[in-house]
Image (cartoon, rainbow, N blue to C red; front, side):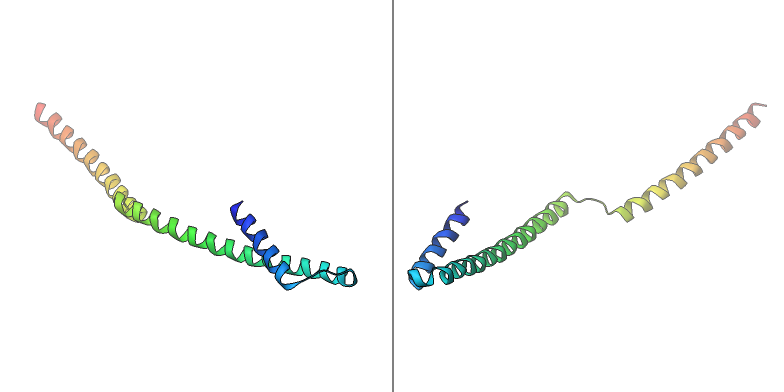
Length: 108
């Protein structure tokens, strides 16, 4: 809201300094007003877009810093480790079966 007030104030100051409306040029002055207002709104949109990009950049860098501080594991590393655990689980199950077979042979 403050930005819009400053924009209107700037427009009024610019318009008062550069134009004096007389009865003969009311239509031209009306068009000039809309042209100037269009230029100011275009400039405001450019400023807003620049501000948006700056905020995105700051938020992104902060998020990257937070993630780095958390010491998280990359997805690829997690998937590799998960696969290794599954293979080891299969090997442990097979070894337990072999141990059970040896125990049964020893009892008999």
